[in-house]
Image (cartoon, rainbow, N blue to C red; front, top):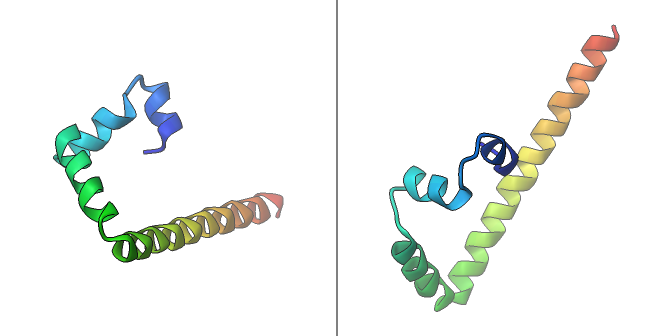
Length: 73
């Protein structure tokens, strides 16, 4: 789900994430503190996430382009 979808359905983003990953705010804070103490690991994790997000954006854009071309035929 996207943040906009959650907002449209009156779902709080953080509550949704806590439930989805079966964590609470304390666990999130502890995890963040742990990974922040390991900057090389944290950087690699963020780089990996960024690549996944960029690939997802490319996938969505390709899908939209293909839909547009299909509708134009």
